[in-house]
Length: 202
Image 1 (cartoon, rainbow, N blue to C red):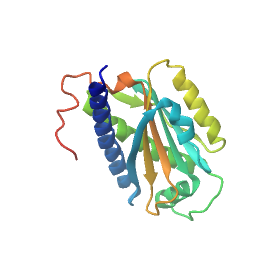
Image 2: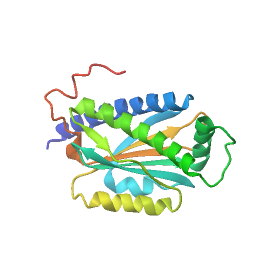
Image 3: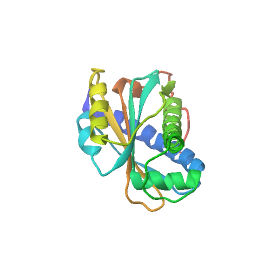
Image 4: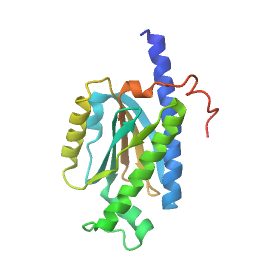
């Protein structure tokens, strides 16, 4: 593929990714009722996933992409952010503690809404039906979770991209991370004009 075509493809992917991230941000803000912010950090080769996912103590959610596309979504929430989310959703103090099942379910629902909204917008723009599995939540050994996700993606044997977003709550620190890692083929429209029929930005 010519260089100009590659540049045009990357620009299109960035545009639909930004719009999908904004949709996810709107949905999570409605759920939490405060200023959670999601921003697109970039689109990278798959090889950068492991280094970009490093960080402090976090809760991790992984979801498998299904429907008319393959890949994974990985969401990492710093533990202080997890407890602030729980304070908003369930009440109580935003302080570290072992999570009860109800609290784990509440964080899974945050991830579920984030992923569903992102894929819904992306699928509309591409003319694809993109779904996801229920979130699997991990609190311990997040580096191993990241390695496992990377290994499952390598097994697809396809060209992969990492669409990376940053998650901030009202206090801005520390950041969470959102990784959408699809097969490159899943980012190609399958309905004529699907990526351009939705008009301007929201």
